[in-house]
Image (cartoon, rainbow, N blue to C red):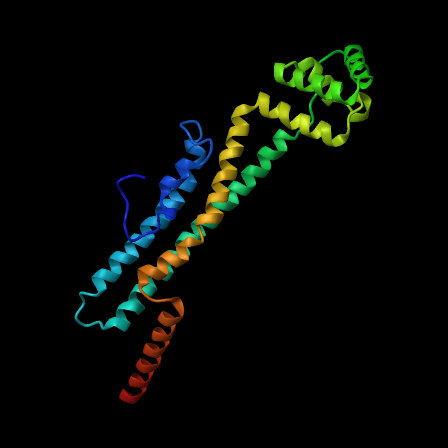
Length: 236
Protein backbone atom coordinates (compact mmCIF):
# COMPACT_ATOMS: atom_id res chain seq x y z
CA UNK A 1 0.00 0.00 0.00
CA UNK A 2 1.10 3.55 -0.65
CA UNK A 3 1.41 6.22 2.05
CA UNK A 4 -1.95 7.67 1.04
CA UNK A 5 -3.89 5.46 3.44
CA UNK A 6 -6.73 6.39 5.76
CA UNK A 7 -7.40 4.44 8.94
CA UNK A 8 -11.10 5.17 8.44
CA UNK A 9 -11.49 3.36 5.11
CA UNK A 10 -11.45 -0.38 4.43
CA UNK A 11 -8.15 -1.40 2.76
CA UNK A 12 -10.17 -3.44 0.27
CA UNK A 13 -11.06 -0.24 -1.59
CA UNK A 14 -7.49 1.03 -1.84
CA UNK A 15 -6.23 1.28 -5.45
CA UNK A 16 -3.02 -0.53 -4.57
CA UNK A 17 -5.06 -3.75 -4.55
CA UNK A 18 -4.97 -3.56 -8.34
CA UNK A 19 -1.21 -4.12 -8.19
CA UNK A 20 -1.82 -7.54 -6.62
CA UNK A 21 -3.68 -8.80 -9.70
CA UNK A 22 -1.88 -11.74 -11.28
CA UNK A 23 0.10 -10.42 -14.24
CA UNK A 24 0.30 -6.79 -13.14
CA UNK A 25 3.55 -5.21 -14.29
CA UNK A 26 4.85 -2.42 -16.51
CA UNK A 27 3.42 -4.18 -19.58
CA UNK A 28 -0.14 -4.40 -18.23
CA UNK A 29 -0.20 -1.24 -16.13
CA UNK A 30 -1.99 0.71 -18.87
CA UNK A 31 -4.64 -2.01 -19.25
CA UNK A 32 -5.39 -1.80 -15.54
CA UNK A 33 -5.22 2.00 -15.32
CA UNK A 34 -9.03 2.49 -15.52
CA UNK A 35 -9.52 -0.04 -12.72
CA UNK A 36 -6.87 1.69 -10.65
CA UNK A 37 -8.57 5.06 -11.21
CA UNK A 38 -12.00 3.66 -10.28
CA UNK A 39 -10.72 2.32 -6.96
CA UNK A 40 -8.76 5.51 -6.29
CA UNK A 41 -11.90 7.59 -6.78
CA UNK A 42 -13.90 5.21 -4.59
CA UNK A 43 -11.31 5.39 -1.80
CA UNK A 44 -11.03 9.16 -1.95
CA UNK A 45 -14.84 9.48 -2.00
CA UNK A 46 -15.08 7.67 1.33
CA UNK A 47 -12.23 9.76 2.73
CA UNK A 48 -14.06 12.91 1.64
CA UNK A 49 -17.28 11.85 3.37
CA UNK A 50 -15.41 11.09 6.60
CA UNK A 51 -13.77 14.54 6.43
CA UNK A 52 -17.11 16.23 5.68
CA UNK A 53 -18.73 14.59 8.68
CA UNK A 54 -15.97 15.78 11.00
CA UNK A 55 -16.26 19.31 9.56
CA UNK A 56 -20.04 19.24 9.94
CA UNK A 57 -19.71 18.50 13.64
CA UNK A 58 -18.02 21.87 14.13
CA UNK A 59 -21.02 23.76 12.70
CA UNK A 60 -22.78 25.25 15.76
CA UNK A 61 -26.04 25.59 13.83
CA UNK A 62 -26.30 21.84 13.16
CA UNK A 63 -27.40 19.22 15.65
CA UNK A 64 -26.52 15.54 15.29
CA UNK A 65 -29.49 14.87 13.01
CA UNK A 66 -28.50 17.67 10.64
CA UNK A 67 -24.94 16.40 10.56
CA UNK A 68 -26.20 12.96 9.51
CA UNK A 69 -28.51 14.44 6.86
CA UNK A 70 -25.86 16.65 5.27
CA UNK A 71 -23.19 13.95 5.39
CA UNK A 72 -25.58 11.42 3.88
CA UNK A 73 -26.45 13.84 1.09
CA UNK A 74 -22.79 14.02 0.15
CA UNK A 75 -22.34 10.26 0.53
CA UNK A 76 -25.23 9.55 -1.82
CA UNK A 77 -23.81 11.83 -4.50
CA UNK A 78 -20.36 10.31 -4.15
CA UNK A 79 -21.72 6.76 -4.16
CA UNK A 80 -23.70 7.35 -7.34
CA UNK A 81 -20.63 8.71 -9.10
CA UNK A 82 -18.34 5.93 -7.89
CA UNK A 83 -20.75 3.09 -8.72
CA UNK A 84 -21.25 4.58 -12.18
CA UNK A 85 -17.48 4.59 -12.66
CA UNK A 86 -17.22 0.97 -11.53
CA UNK A 87 -20.02 -0.03 -13.90
CA UNK A 88 -18.34 1.66 -16.86
CA UNK A 89 -14.94 0.11 -16.14
CA UNK A 90 -16.43 -3.34 -15.57
CA UNK A 91 -18.48 -3.06 -18.77
CA UNK A 92 -15.37 -2.21 -20.78
CA UNK A 93 -13.51 -5.11 -19.21
CA UNK A 94 -16.31 -7.51 -20.14
CA UNK A 95 -16.16 -6.32 -23.76
CA UNK A 96 -12.37 -6.54 -23.84
CA UNK A 97 -12.37 -10.02 -22.34
CA UNK A 98 -14.90 -11.23 -24.91
CA UNK A 99 -12.82 -9.80 -27.74
CA UNK A 100 -9.59 -11.47 -26.60
CA UNK A 101 -11.40 -14.75 -25.88
CA UNK A 102 -12.61 -14.72 -29.48
CA UNK A 103 -9.09 -14.02 -30.74
CA UNK A 104 -7.62 -16.86 -28.69
CA UNK A 105 -10.27 -19.26 -29.95
CA UNK A 106 -10.06 -18.30 -33.63
CA UNK A 107 -9.52 -21.12 -36.16
CA UNK A 108 -5.95 -21.80 -37.21
CA UNK A 109 -4.91 -21.61 -40.85
CA UNK A 110 -2.90 -24.49 -42.26
CA UNK A 111 0.68 -23.49 -43.04
CA UNK A 112 1.85 -26.68 -44.73
CA UNK A 113 1.33 -27.71 -48.33
CA UNK A 114 -1.90 -29.65 -48.84
CA UNK A 115 -0.17 -33.00 -49.41
CA UNK A 116 2.08 -32.59 -46.36
CA UNK A 117 -0.84 -31.54 -44.15
CA UNK A 118 -2.81 -34.57 -45.31
CA UNK A 119 0.07 -36.90 -44.50
CA UNK A 120 0.52 -35.36 -41.05
CA UNK A 121 -3.15 -35.84 -40.24
CA UNK A 122 -3.10 -39.42 -41.47
CA UNK A 123 0.03 -40.12 -39.44
CA UNK A 124 -1.57 -38.84 -36.23
CA UNK A 125 -4.97 -40.42 -36.90
CA UNK A 126 -3.44 -43.92 -36.81
CA UNK A 127 -1.83 -43.36 -33.40
CA UNK A 128 -3.27 -44.55 -30.10
CA UNK A 129 -5.12 -41.91 -28.13
CA UNK A 130 -2.28 -41.53 -25.63
CA UNK A 131 0.39 -41.29 -28.33
CA UNK A 132 -1.75 -38.86 -30.32
CA UNK A 133 -2.08 -36.38 -27.47
CA UNK A 134 1.59 -36.73 -26.53
CA UNK A 135 2.60 -36.00 -30.13
CA UNK A 136 0.35 -32.94 -30.38
CA UNK A 137 1.47 -31.59 -27.03
CA UNK A 138 5.11 -31.91 -28.03
CA UNK A 139 4.38 -30.06 -31.28
CA UNK A 140 2.66 -27.30 -29.32
CA UNK A 141 5.48 -27.02 -26.80
CA UNK A 142 8.16 -26.87 -29.51
CA UNK A 143 6.27 -24.30 -31.59
CA UNK A 144 6.01 -26.63 -34.61
CA UNK A 145 3.63 -24.46 -36.65
CA UNK A 146 3.52 -26.81 -39.65
CA UNK A 147 2.42 -29.80 -37.57
CA UNK A 148 0.08 -27.87 -35.31
CA UNK A 149 -1.64 -25.96 -38.10
CA UNK A 150 -2.03 -29.13 -40.17
CA UNK A 151 -3.83 -30.87 -37.30
CA UNK A 152 -5.84 -27.94 -35.96
CA UNK A 153 -6.55 -26.16 -39.24
CA UNK A 154 -8.81 -28.93 -40.57
CA UNK A 155 -11.91 -30.75 -39.28
CA UNK A 156 -10.87 -32.63 -36.11
CA UNK A 157 -12.07 -36.05 -37.29
CA UNK A 158 -9.42 -36.02 -40.05
CA UNK A 159 -6.80 -36.32 -37.30
CA UNK A 160 -8.84 -38.57 -35.05
CA UNK A 161 -9.53 -35.74 -32.60
CA UNK A 162 -12.73 -34.61 -30.98
CA UNK A 163 -14.01 -31.06 -31.47
CA UNK A 164 -13.36 -30.37 -27.79
CA UNK A 165 -9.73 -31.47 -27.93
CA UNK A 166 -9.20 -29.39 -31.04
CA UNK A 167 -10.67 -26.37 -29.23
CA UNK A 168 -8.39 -26.89 -26.22
CA UNK A 169 -5.27 -27.31 -28.36
CA UNK A 170 -6.21 -24.30 -30.49
CA UNK A 171 -6.45 -22.19 -27.35
CA UNK A 172 -3.08 -23.45 -26.14
CA UNK A 173 -1.47 -22.61 -29.47
CA UNK A 174 -2.89 -19.09 -29.53
CA UNK A 175 -1.79 -18.48 -25.94
CA UNK A 176 1.72 -19.68 -26.80
CA UNK A 177 2.04 -17.57 -29.93
CA UNK A 178 0.19 -14.55 -28.51
CA UNK A 179 1.51 -14.48 -24.96
CA UNK A 180 0.99 -10.71 -24.62
CA UNK A 181 -2.67 -11.10 -25.51
CA UNK A 182 -3.08 -13.98 -23.07
CA UNK A 183 -1.44 -11.89 -20.35
CA UNK A 184 -3.80 -8.98 -21.02
CA UNK A 185 -6.72 -11.35 -20.76
CA UNK A 186 -5.49 -12.66 -17.41
CA UNK A 187 -5.20 -9.21 -15.85
CA UNK A 188 -8.52 -8.07 -17.30
CA UNK A 189 -10.28 -11.06 -15.79
CA UNK A 190 -8.51 -10.30 -12.49
CA UNK A 191 -9.62 -6.66 -12.64
CA UNK A 192 -13.23 -7.64 -13.33
CA UNK A 193 -13.20 -10.06 -10.39
CA UNK A 194 -11.65 -7.41 -8.11
CA UNK A 195 -14.39 -4.92 -8.97
CA UNK A 196 -17.10 -7.52 -8.42
CA UNK A 197 -15.59 -8.64 -5.11
CA UNK A 198 -14.47 -5.36 -3.55
CA UNK A 199 -16.66 -2.77 -5.27
CA UNK A 200 -19.78 -3.58 -3.20
CA UNK A 201 -17.81 -2.84 -0.02
CA UNK A 202 -18.26 0.83 -0.90
CA UNK A 203 -21.78 0.82 0.55
CA UNK A 204 -20.68 -0.35 3.99
CA UNK A 205 -17.76 2.05 3.93
CA UNK A 206 -20.06 4.96 3.13
CA UNK A 207 -22.49 3.97 5.90
CA UNK A 208 -19.60 4.00 8.34
CA UNK A 209 -18.47 7.40 7.04
CA UNK A 210 -21.96 8.86 7.45
CA UNK A 211 -22.24 7.47 10.94
CA UNK A 212 -25.76 6.13 10.40
CA UNK A 213 -27.45 3.49 8.20
CA UNK A 214 -29.28 4.70 5.09
CA UNK A 215 -32.73 4.07 6.55
CA UNK A 216 -32.00 6.28 9.55
CA UNK A 217 -30.63 9.08 7.35
CA UNK A 218 -33.69 8.78 5.13
CA UNK A 219 -36.05 8.97 8.12
CA UNK A 220 -34.28 12.07 9.44
CA UNK A 221 -34.40 13.69 6.02
CA UNK A 222 -38.12 12.97 5.64
CA UNK A 223 -38.86 14.30 9.11
CA UNK A 224 -36.90 17.48 8.38
CA UNK A 225 -38.74 17.98 5.08
CA UNK A 226 -42.12 17.45 6.73
CA UNK A 227 -41.30 19.88 9.49
CA UNK A 228 -40.09 22.54 7.06
CA UNK A 229 -43.26 22.18 4.96
CA UNK A 230 -45.40 22.66 8.05
CA UNK A 231 -43.39 25.69 9.08
CA UNK A 232 -43.77 27.28 5.64
CA UNK A 233 -47.50 26.60 5.57
CA UNK A 234 -47.92 28.05 9.05
CA UNK A 235 -45.90 31.12 8.15
CA UNK A 236 -48.02 31.70 5.06
